[in-house]
Image (cartoon, rainbow over all chains, first blue to last red; front, side):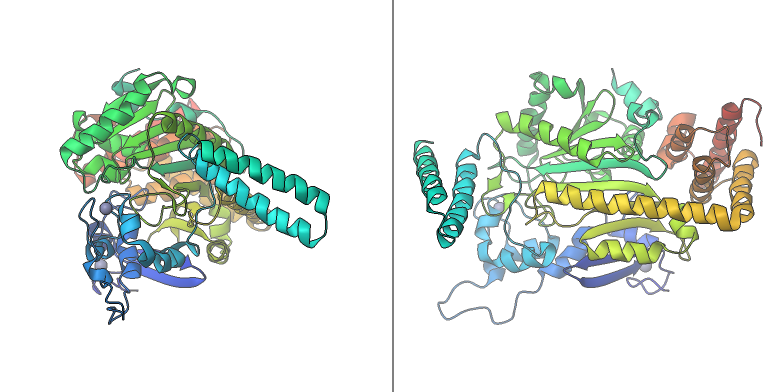
Length: 174
Length: 359
Ligand SMILES: [Zn+2]
Ligand SMILES: [Zn+2]
Protein backbone atom coordinates (compact mmCIF):
# COMPACT_ATOMS: atom_id res chain seq x y z
CA UNK A 1 0.00 0.00 0.00
CA UNK A 2 1.33 3.44 -0.93
CA UNK A 3 1.41 6.40 1.42
CA UNK A 4 -1.75 8.46 1.07
CA UNK A 5 0.19 11.69 1.55
CA UNK A 6 2.99 11.43 -1.00
CA UNK A 7 1.79 8.48 -3.09
CA UNK A 8 5.43 7.44 -3.48
CA UNK A 9 6.72 5.50 -0.53
CA UNK A 10 5.10 2.43 0.99
CA UNK A 11 2.82 3.27 3.89
CA UNK A 12 4.31 1.89 7.09
CA UNK A 13 2.05 3.57 9.63
CA UNK A 14 -1.58 2.67 9.75
CA UNK A 15 -4.16 4.32 11.95
CA UNK A 16 -7.81 3.87 12.42
CA UNK A 17 -9.76 6.61 14.07
CA UNK A 18 -13.34 6.04 15.02
CA UNK A 19 -15.47 8.91 16.18
CA UNK A 20 -19.13 8.16 16.79
CA UNK A 21 -18.87 4.98 14.83
CA UNK A 22 -17.46 6.86 11.88
CA UNK A 23 -14.31 5.11 10.80
CA UNK A 24 -11.42 6.88 9.12
CA UNK A 25 -8.24 5.12 8.09
CA UNK A 26 -4.85 6.67 7.53
CA UNK A 27 -1.96 5.05 5.78
CA UNK A 28 1.24 7.05 5.62
CA UNK A 29 4.97 6.58 5.26
CA UNK A 30 7.43 7.44 7.99
CA UNK A 31 8.91 10.49 6.33
CA UNK A 32 5.48 12.04 5.84
CA UNK A 33 4.60 11.17 9.41
CA UNK A 34 7.75 12.88 10.60
CA UNK A 35 6.91 16.03 8.68
CA UNK A 36 3.52 16.21 10.27
CA UNK A 37 4.73 16.51 13.83
CA UNK A 38 4.42 14.87 17.21
CA UNK A 39 2.12 12.09 18.23
CA UNK A 40 3.20 8.50 18.29
CA UNK A 41 5.05 7.24 21.31
CA UNK A 42 8.21 5.46 20.35
CA UNK A 43 8.87 7.41 17.19
CA UNK A 44 11.17 10.39 17.32
CA UNK A 45 8.60 12.50 15.63
CA UNK A 46 5.27 10.90 15.05
CA UNK A 47 2.09 11.81 13.32
CA UNK A 48 0.00 14.64 14.56
CA UNK A 49 -3.56 14.29 15.65
CA UNK A 50 -3.90 18.01 15.03
CA UNK A 51 -3.48 17.69 11.32
CA UNK A 52 -6.25 15.12 11.36
CA UNK A 53 -8.32 17.37 13.51
CA UNK A 54 -8.03 20.40 11.29
CA UNK A 55 -9.78 18.36 8.64
CA UNK A 56 -12.65 17.95 11.07
CA UNK A 57 -12.82 21.60 12.00
CA UNK A 58 -12.80 22.98 8.52
CA UNK A 59 -16.38 22.33 7.63
CA UNK A 60 -18.04 25.69 8.05
CA UNK A 61 -21.06 25.60 5.73
CA UNK A 62 -20.96 28.00 2.77
CA UNK A 63 -22.98 31.21 2.68
CA UNK A 64 -22.92 31.71 6.41
CA UNK A 65 -24.04 35.33 6.51
CA UNK A 66 -27.44 34.80 8.04
CA UNK A 67 -30.60 36.89 7.97
CA UNK A 68 -29.67 38.81 11.11
CA UNK A 69 -26.39 39.84 9.51
CA UNK A 70 -24.25 37.96 12.02
CA UNK A 71 -20.59 37.68 11.16
CA UNK A 72 -19.57 34.54 9.35
CA UNK A 73 -17.37 32.34 11.47
CA UNK A 74 -14.33 33.06 9.31
CA UNK A 75 -14.24 36.62 10.62
CA UNK A 76 -14.58 35.71 14.27
CA UNK A 77 -11.59 36.76 16.33
CA UNK A 78 -10.86 36.20 20.02
CA UNK A 79 -10.53 39.63 21.62
CA UNK A 80 -8.23 38.27 24.32
CA UNK A 81 -5.52 36.46 22.35
CA UNK A 82 -6.29 37.64 18.82
CA UNK A 83 -6.69 34.19 17.28
CA UNK A 84 -9.17 34.12 14.40
CA UNK A 85 -11.61 31.29 13.81
CA UNK A 86 -9.91 30.59 10.49
CA UNK A 87 -6.54 30.21 12.24
CA UNK A 88 -8.17 27.99 14.83
CA UNK A 89 -9.64 25.71 12.19
CA UNK A 90 -6.25 25.44 10.46
CA UNK A 91 -4.25 24.65 13.59
CA UNK A 92 -6.90 22.78 15.52
CA UNK A 93 -5.91 24.60 18.70
CA UNK A 94 -7.24 27.46 20.75
CA UNK A 95 -5.11 30.47 21.71
CA UNK A 96 -6.53 30.97 25.18
CA UNK A 97 -9.42 29.88 27.36
CA UNK A 98 -11.42 32.90 26.23
CA UNK A 99 -11.52 31.50 22.67
CA UNK A 100 -14.06 28.99 23.93
CA UNK A 101 -16.45 31.83 24.69
CA UNK A 102 -15.63 33.83 21.57
CA UNK A 103 -16.16 30.96 19.16
CA UNK A 104 -19.14 29.94 21.29
CA UNK A 105 -21.90 28.25 19.37
CA UNK A 106 -19.58 27.31 16.50
CA UNK A 107 -17.99 24.79 18.82
CA UNK A 108 -20.97 22.58 19.49
CA UNK A 109 -20.89 20.70 16.18
CA UNK A 110 -17.12 20.25 16.45
CA UNK A 111 -17.22 18.95 20.01
CA UNK A 112 -20.12 16.73 19.05
CA UNK A 113 -18.05 15.22 16.26
CA UNK A 114 -14.97 14.73 18.38
CA UNK A 115 -16.57 13.57 21.63
CA UNK A 116 -20.18 12.81 20.78
CA UNK A 117 -21.05 15.31 23.52
CA UNK A 118 -20.89 19.00 24.23
CA UNK A 119 -21.26 19.22 28.01
CA UNK A 120 -18.84 18.43 30.81
CA UNK A 121 -20.06 16.08 33.54
CA UNK A 122 -16.74 15.31 35.25
CA UNK A 123 -14.64 16.80 37.99
CA UNK A 124 -15.14 20.37 39.15
CA UNK A 125 -12.33 22.44 40.72
CA UNK A 126 -12.69 22.22 44.50
CA UNK A 127 -11.84 25.80 45.44
CA UNK A 128 -13.08 27.89 42.52
CA UNK A 129 -15.89 25.57 41.53
CA UNK A 130 -17.93 25.59 44.75
CA UNK A 131 -20.81 27.43 43.13
CA UNK A 132 -20.88 25.13 40.09
CA UNK A 133 -20.76 22.13 42.39
CA UNK A 134 -23.77 23.45 44.32
CA UNK A 135 -25.68 24.17 41.11
CA UNK A 136 -25.01 20.68 39.87
CA UNK A 137 -26.26 19.24 43.15
CA UNK A 138 -29.41 21.35 42.96
CA UNK A 139 -30.09 20.19 39.41
CA UNK A 140 -29.79 16.59 40.48
CA UNK A 141 -32.08 17.13 43.46
CA UNK A 142 -34.64 18.89 41.26
CA UNK A 143 -34.73 15.98 38.85
CA UNK A 144 -35.20 13.65 41.80
CA UNK A 145 -37.90 15.94 43.19
CA UNK A 146 -39.92 15.82 39.96
CA UNK A 147 -39.72 12.07 39.91
CA UNK A 148 -40.92 11.80 43.51
CA UNK A 149 -43.87 14.09 42.80
CA UNK A 150 -44.83 12.04 39.78
CA UNK A 151 -44.74 8.93 41.91
CA UNK A 152 -46.70 10.75 44.61
CA UNK A 153 -44.00 10.28 47.23
CA UNK A 154 -44.78 13.62 48.81
CA UNK A 155 -42.94 13.15 52.06
CA UNK A 156 -39.61 12.55 50.34
CA UNK A 157 -40.43 15.36 47.93
CA UNK A 158 -40.84 17.80 50.79
CA UNK A 159 -37.46 16.80 52.20
CA UNK A 160 -35.87 17.30 48.81
CA UNK A 161 -37.51 20.72 48.44
CA UNK A 162 -36.08 21.82 51.78
CA UNK A 163 -32.64 20.59 50.85
CA UNK A 164 -32.83 22.48 47.53
CA UNK A 165 -33.80 25.70 49.36
CA UNK A 166 -30.90 25.25 51.74
CA UNK A 167 -28.43 24.83 48.86
CA UNK A 168 -29.89 27.84 47.06
CA UNK A 169 -29.27 29.97 50.14
CA UNK A 170 -25.71 28.64 50.24
CA UNK A 171 -25.15 29.66 46.61
CA UNK A 172 -26.35 33.16 47.38
CA UNK A 173 -23.76 33.37 50.19
CA UNK A 174 -20.78 32.19 48.14
CA UNK B 1 18.67 13.78 43.87
CA UNK B 2 20.13 15.62 40.93
CA UNK B 3 19.37 15.88 37.26
CA UNK B 4 22.17 13.37 36.76
CA UNK B 5 20.18 10.40 37.95
CA UNK B 6 17.20 11.25 35.77
CA UNK B 7 19.28 11.10 32.64
CA UNK B 8 21.93 8.58 33.58
CA UNK B 9 20.03 5.77 35.14
CA UNK B 10 18.40 3.68 32.50
CA UNK B 11 15.42 2.60 34.48
CA UNK B 12 13.11 4.68 36.54
CA UNK B 13 12.61 3.16 39.98
CA UNK B 14 9.02 2.34 39.14
CA UNK B 15 10.10 0.17 36.22
CA UNK B 16 12.21 -2.03 38.48
CA UNK B 17 9.32 -2.75 40.78
CA UNK B 18 6.64 -5.18 39.85
CA UNK B 19 3.02 -4.30 39.26
CA UNK B 20 -0.07 -6.45 38.85
CA UNK B 21 -0.56 -8.27 35.51
CA UNK B 22 2.90 -7.36 34.23
CA UNK B 23 2.89 -10.42 32.00
CA UNK B 24 0.62 -8.41 29.68
CA UNK B 25 0.46 -4.81 30.86
CA UNK B 26 3.77 -2.95 30.77
CA UNK B 27 2.54 0.29 32.29
CA UNK B 28 -0.49 2.39 33.17
CA UNK B 29 -0.54 6.10 32.67
CA UNK B 30 -2.79 9.05 33.47
CA UNK B 31 -2.23 12.49 32.05
CA UNK B 32 -4.26 15.50 33.15
CA UNK B 33 -4.21 18.73 31.11
CA UNK B 34 -4.87 22.01 32.89
CA UNK B 35 -4.50 25.71 32.08
CA UNK B 36 -4.37 28.87 34.09
CA UNK B 37 -7.24 31.21 33.47
CA UNK B 38 -6.45 34.50 31.74
CA UNK B 39 -3.08 33.42 30.35
CA UNK B 40 -2.68 32.68 26.64
CA UNK B 41 -1.97 29.02 25.95
CA UNK B 42 1.74 28.16 25.50
CA UNK B 43 1.51 28.08 21.72
CA UNK B 44 0.61 31.79 21.55
CA UNK B 45 2.34 33.02 24.70
CA UNK B 46 5.20 35.52 24.50
CA UNK B 47 8.33 34.39 26.29
CA UNK B 48 7.53 36.81 29.12
CA UNK B 49 4.05 35.31 29.51
CA UNK B 50 5.42 31.78 29.35
CA UNK B 51 8.02 32.69 31.95
CA UNK B 52 5.28 33.98 34.27
CA UNK B 53 3.34 30.75 33.98
CA UNK B 54 6.46 28.71 34.61
CA UNK B 55 7.32 30.71 37.75
CA UNK B 56 3.80 30.43 39.09
CA UNK B 57 3.56 26.67 38.56
CA UNK B 58 7.06 25.64 39.61
CA UNK B 59 6.59 27.70 42.77
CA UNK B 60 3.94 25.21 43.88
CA UNK B 61 6.63 22.52 44.18
CA UNK B 62 8.80 24.85 46.22
CA UNK B 63 6.06 25.53 48.77
CA UNK B 64 6.29 21.90 49.88
CA UNK B 65 2.63 21.30 49.09
CA UNK B 66 3.58 18.42 46.82
CA UNK B 67 5.84 16.76 49.37
CA UNK B 68 3.31 14.08 50.23
CA UNK B 69 3.69 12.89 46.61
CA UNK B 70 7.34 13.83 46.21
CA UNK B 71 10.04 14.96 46.73
CA UNK B 72 10.17 16.75 43.41
CA UNK B 73 12.97 18.31 41.47
CA UNK B 74 12.36 20.95 38.84
CA UNK B 75 14.33 20.86 35.61
CA UNK B 76 14.13 23.70 33.13
CA UNK B 77 14.33 22.38 29.60
CA UNK B 78 16.59 25.21 28.48
CA UNK B 79 19.21 23.99 30.97
CA UNK B 80 19.39 20.52 29.46
CA UNK B 81 21.43 19.35 26.48
CA UNK B 82 19.71 17.92 23.44
CA UNK B 83 20.78 14.42 24.43
CA UNK B 84 19.55 14.80 28.01
CA UNK B 85 16.18 15.93 26.73
CA UNK B 86 16.01 12.96 24.40
CA UNK B 87 16.72 10.54 27.23
CA UNK B 88 13.87 12.06 29.25
CA UNK B 89 11.61 11.49 26.24
CA UNK B 90 12.69 7.88 25.88
CA UNK B 91 12.01 7.28 29.55
CA UNK B 92 8.54 8.75 28.86
CA UNK B 93 9.15 11.44 31.46
CA UNK B 94 8.52 14.31 29.07
CA UNK B 95 6.76 14.51 25.72
CA UNK B 96 8.68 14.93 22.45
CA UNK B 97 7.03 18.28 21.90
CA UNK B 98 8.19 19.64 25.27
CA UNK B 99 11.70 18.48 24.43
CA UNK B 100 11.79 20.00 20.97
CA UNK B 101 10.19 23.39 21.19
CA UNK B 102 11.99 26.37 22.53
CA UNK B 103 9.33 27.86 24.80
CA UNK B 104 9.89 28.13 28.55
CA UNK B 105 9.31 24.49 29.32
CA UNK B 106 10.01 22.82 32.62
CA UNK B 107 9.35 19.51 34.25
CA UNK B 108 8.92 18.65 37.92
CA UNK B 109 9.96 15.06 38.49
CA UNK B 110 9.23 12.98 41.54
CA UNK B 111 12.21 11.13 42.94
CA UNK B 112 11.02 7.72 41.82
CA UNK B 113 10.02 9.18 38.44
CA UNK B 114 6.47 7.93 38.62
CA UNK B 115 5.17 11.49 38.48
CA UNK B 116 6.23 14.08 35.97
CA UNK B 117 4.59 17.47 35.85
CA UNK B 118 5.18 19.31 32.60
CA UNK B 119 4.93 23.06 32.32
CA UNK B 120 4.25 24.88 29.05
CA UNK B 121 3.75 21.82 26.96
CA UNK B 122 0.71 22.18 24.72
CA UNK B 123 -1.15 23.17 27.89
CA UNK B 124 0.22 25.16 30.83
CA UNK B 125 0.17 22.14 33.09
CA UNK B 126 0.27 18.45 32.36
CA UNK B 127 0.33 16.07 35.28
CA UNK B 128 1.44 12.60 34.36
CA UNK B 129 1.48 9.52 36.59
CA UNK B 130 3.07 6.37 35.28
CA UNK B 131 2.76 3.09 37.15
CA UNK B 132 4.18 -0.33 36.33
CA UNK B 133 1.69 -3.03 35.35
CA UNK B 134 -2.05 -2.67 35.44
CA UNK B 135 -2.73 0.11 37.95
CA UNK B 136 -4.78 2.63 36.06
CA UNK B 137 -7.08 3.45 38.99
CA UNK B 138 -4.15 3.96 41.34
CA UNK B 139 -2.55 6.28 38.80
CA UNK B 140 -5.75 8.33 38.56
CA UNK B 141 -6.05 8.65 42.34
CA UNK B 142 -2.55 10.10 42.58
CA UNK B 143 -2.91 12.37 39.55
CA UNK B 144 -6.18 13.76 40.84
CA UNK B 145 -4.62 14.47 44.23
CA UNK B 146 -1.81 16.42 42.58
CA UNK B 147 -4.39 18.25 40.48
CA UNK B 148 -6.18 19.33 43.69
CA UNK B 149 -2.92 20.61 45.15
CA UNK B 150 -2.29 22.87 42.16
CA UNK B 151 -5.90 24.03 42.18
CA UNK B 152 -5.59 25.18 45.80
CA UNK B 153 -3.19 27.92 44.75
CA UNK B 154 -3.79 28.57 41.04
CA UNK B 155 -6.89 29.59 39.12
CA UNK B 156 -7.67 27.03 36.48
CA UNK B 157 -9.41 27.87 33.22
CA UNK B 158 -12.71 26.09 33.83
CA UNK B 159 -16.12 26.54 32.32
CA UNK B 160 -19.32 25.11 33.72
CA UNK B 161 -20.43 23.73 30.36
CA UNK B 162 -17.10 22.83 28.74
CA UNK B 163 -15.18 21.74 31.81
CA UNK B 164 -11.40 22.19 31.91
CA UNK B 165 -10.43 24.33 28.94
CA UNK B 166 -7.52 22.97 26.97
CA UNK B 167 -5.49 24.10 24.02
CA UNK B 168 -6.78 21.28 21.85
CA UNK B 169 -10.50 20.52 21.57
CA UNK B 170 -9.72 16.80 21.79
CA UNK B 171 -8.79 17.24 25.48
CA UNK B 172 -11.49 19.61 26.70
CA UNK B 173 -13.82 18.53 29.50
CA UNK B 174 -12.01 16.25 31.90
CA UNK B 175 -8.63 16.89 30.29
CA UNK B 176 -7.61 13.32 31.05
CA UNK B 177 -5.94 10.78 28.89
CA UNK B 178 -5.75 7.38 30.52
CA UNK B 179 -3.76 4.69 28.83
CA UNK B 180 -2.30 1.25 29.25
CA UNK B 181 0.69 -0.06 27.33
CA UNK B 182 0.09 -3.71 26.52
CA UNK B 183 2.35 -6.41 25.16
CA UNK B 184 0.15 -8.63 22.97
CA UNK B 185 2.28 -11.18 21.13
CA UNK B 186 -0.26 -13.95 21.71
CA UNK B 187 -3.04 -12.06 19.97
CA UNK B 188 -0.69 -11.07 17.14
CA UNK B 189 0.63 -14.60 16.60
CA UNK B 190 -2.84 -16.14 16.66
CA UNK B 191 -4.02 -13.39 14.29
CA UNK B 192 -6.82 -12.21 16.51
CA UNK B 193 -5.35 -8.79 17.01
CA UNK B 194 -7.14 -6.89 14.26
CA UNK B 195 -10.53 -8.14 15.28
CA UNK B 196 -9.89 -7.22 18.89
CA UNK B 197 -8.43 -3.83 18.11
CA UNK B 198 -11.35 -2.85 15.96
CA UNK B 199 -13.74 -3.96 18.68
CA UNK B 200 -11.85 -1.75 21.11
CA UNK B 201 -12.27 1.22 18.82
CA UNK B 202 -16.00 0.65 18.64
CA UNK B 203 -16.27 1.45 22.34
CA UNK B 204 -14.63 4.84 22.06
CA UNK B 205 -11.06 3.85 22.88
CA UNK B 206 -8.07 4.60 20.67
CA UNK B 207 -5.34 2.11 19.89
CA UNK B 208 -1.85 2.99 18.86
CA UNK B 209 0.66 0.51 17.64
CA UNK B 210 3.70 1.06 15.52
CA UNK B 211 3.59 -1.06 12.45
CA UNK B 212 6.39 -2.25 10.26
CA UNK B 213 5.97 -3.36 6.70
CA UNK B 214 3.39 -6.08 6.55
CA UNK B 215 0.86 -6.40 9.29
CA UNK B 216 3.04 -7.14 12.28
CA UNK B 217 3.30 -4.47 14.93
CA UNK B 218 6.87 -3.74 15.95
CA UNK B 219 7.52 -5.20 19.35
CA UNK B 220 3.84 -6.18 19.66
CA UNK B 221 3.26 -3.18 21.88
CA UNK B 222 -0.08 -1.42 21.83
CA UNK B 223 -1.21 1.61 23.73
CA UNK B 224 -4.90 1.74 24.47
CA UNK B 225 -6.38 4.99 25.65
CA UNK B 226 -9.61 6.91 26.01
CA UNK B 227 -10.59 9.02 23.03
CA UNK B 228 -13.44 10.98 24.56
CA UNK B 229 -12.84 13.57 27.26
CA UNK B 230 -16.14 15.47 27.19
CA UNK B 231 -19.51 14.17 28.36
CA UNK B 232 -18.12 11.33 30.45
CA UNK B 233 -16.90 11.58 34.01
CA UNK B 234 -13.37 10.60 34.93
CA UNK B 235 -14.77 7.59 36.76
CA UNK B 236 -16.62 6.39 33.65
CA UNK B 237 -13.60 6.97 31.42
CA UNK B 238 -11.29 5.00 33.67
CA UNK B 239 -13.80 2.26 34.39
CA UNK B 240 -14.35 1.80 30.66
CA UNK B 241 -10.63 1.52 29.92
CA UNK B 242 -10.14 -0.72 32.93
CA UNK B 243 -12.80 -3.22 31.95
CA UNK B 244 -11.73 -3.35 28.30
CA UNK B 245 -8.08 -3.80 29.27
CA UNK B 246 -9.07 -6.52 31.72
CA UNK B 247 -10.79 -8.41 28.89
CA UNK B 248 -7.80 -8.01 26.60
CA UNK B 249 -5.52 -9.38 29.32
CA UNK B 250 -7.68 -12.48 29.52
CA UNK B 251 -7.79 -12.88 25.73
CA UNK B 252 -4.03 -12.49 25.52
CA UNK B 253 -3.45 -15.10 28.23
CA UNK B 254 -5.83 -17.50 26.52
CA UNK B 255 -4.06 -16.97 23.19
CA UNK B 256 -0.68 -17.68 24.82
CA UNK B 257 -2.04 -20.83 26.38
CA UNK B 258 -3.43 -21.92 23.04
CA UNK B 259 -0.05 -21.41 21.41
CA UNK B 260 1.56 -23.51 24.11
CA UNK B 261 -1.02 -26.25 23.77
CA UNK B 262 -1.22 -26.39 20.00
CA UNK B 263 2.22 -25.40 18.75
CA UNK B 264 4.61 -25.50 21.61
CA UNK B 265 7.65 -26.53 19.60
CA UNK B 266 7.17 -23.81 17.01
CA UNK B 267 6.69 -21.26 19.73
CA UNK B 268 9.80 -22.46 21.57
CA UNK B 269 11.71 -22.36 18.33
CA UNK B 270 10.69 -18.78 17.70
CA UNK B 271 11.48 -17.64 21.23
CA UNK B 272 14.83 -19.42 21.41
CA UNK B 273 15.89 -18.27 17.94
CA UNK B 274 15.26 -14.71 19.04
CA UNK B 275 17.13 -15.36 22.25
CA UNK B 276 20.00 -16.83 20.27
CA UNK B 277 20.05 -13.85 17.92
CA UNK B 278 20.01 -11.36 20.76
CA UNK B 279 22.81 -13.25 22.50
CA UNK B 280 25.09 -13.47 19.48
CA UNK B 281 24.26 -10.88 16.82
CA UNK B 282 26.86 -8.23 16.02
CA UNK B 283 24.50 -5.80 14.26
CA UNK B 284 20.92 -5.14 15.29
CA UNK B 285 18.60 -2.38 14.11
CA UNK B 286 15.98 -1.02 16.46
CA UNK B 287 13.10 -2.71 14.68
CA UNK B 288 14.65 -6.15 14.86
CA UNK B 289 15.65 -5.56 18.47
CA UNK B 290 12.06 -4.67 19.37
CA UNK B 291 10.70 -7.81 17.72
CA UNK B 292 13.31 -10.13 19.24
CA UNK B 293 12.92 -8.60 22.68
CA UNK B 294 9.18 -9.13 22.38
CA UNK B 295 9.72 -12.82 21.58
CA UNK B 296 12.05 -13.28 24.51
CA UNK B 297 9.75 -11.41 26.84
CA UNK B 298 6.97 -13.78 25.79
CA UNK B 299 9.29 -16.72 26.43
CA UNK B 300 10.03 -15.45 29.94
CA UNK B 301 6.36 -14.86 30.72
CA UNK B 302 5.53 -18.42 29.58
CA UNK B 303 8.40 -19.97 31.51
CA UNK B 304 10.21 -21.06 28.33
CA UNK B 305 13.27 -19.04 29.31
CA UNK B 306 14.16 -19.20 32.94
CA UNK B 307 17.22 -17.17 33.63
CA UNK B 308 16.36 -13.68 32.34
CA UNK B 309 14.25 -11.35 34.44
CA UNK B 310 11.35 -9.36 32.97
CA UNK B 311 12.96 -6.24 34.43
CA UNK B 312 16.04 -6.90 32.34
CA UNK B 313 13.76 -6.93 29.30
CA UNK B 314 12.21 -3.59 30.29
CA UNK B 315 15.69 -2.24 30.67
CA UNK B 316 16.78 -3.43 27.25
CA UNK B 317 13.66 -2.07 25.60
CA UNK B 318 14.58 1.35 26.95
CA UNK B 319 18.35 1.10 26.58
CA UNK B 320 18.26 0.15 22.94
CA UNK B 321 16.54 3.36 21.87
CA UNK B 322 18.79 5.84 20.04
CA UNK B 323 19.05 8.58 22.70
CA UNK B 324 19.84 6.13 25.42
CA UNK B 325 22.45 4.33 23.40
CA UNK B 326 24.28 7.57 22.82
CA UNK B 327 24.01 8.47 26.48
CA UNK B 328 25.28 5.06 27.57
CA UNK B 329 28.25 5.14 25.24
CA UNK B 330 28.80 8.89 25.57
CA UNK B 331 29.27 9.58 21.91
CA UNK B 332 27.38 10.70 18.85
CA UNK B 333 26.81 7.79 16.53
CA UNK B 334 25.81 7.10 12.96
CA UNK B 335 22.87 4.71 12.56
CA UNK B 336 25.29 1.92 11.57
CA UNK B 337 27.38 2.49 14.68
CA UNK B 338 24.23 2.51 16.76
CA UNK B 339 23.19 -0.88 15.36
CA UNK B 340 26.58 -2.31 16.37
CA UNK B 341 26.43 -0.75 19.82
CA UNK B 342 22.87 -1.92 20.31
CA UNK B 343 23.85 -5.51 19.54
CA UNK B 344 26.83 -5.21 21.89
CA UNK B 345 24.73 -3.81 24.70
CA UNK B 346 22.12 -6.55 24.42
CA UNK B 347 24.79 -9.29 24.32
CA UNK B 348 26.45 -7.94 27.45
CA UNK B 349 23.16 -7.54 29.24
CA UNK B 350 22.09 -11.11 28.52
CA UNK B 351 25.57 -12.36 29.45
CA UNK B 352 25.40 -10.70 32.86
CA UNK B 353 21.84 -11.91 33.42
CA UNK B 354 22.73 -15.55 32.91
CA UNK B 355 26.09 -15.38 34.77
CA UNK B 356 27.74 -17.63 32.23
CA UNK B 357 26.54 -16.17 28.97
CA UNK B 358 24.88 -17.61 25.94
CA UNK B 359 22.00 -20.01 25.91
ZN1 LIG C 1 4.61 9.60 2.26
ZN1 LIG D 1 -8.33 33.45 22.69
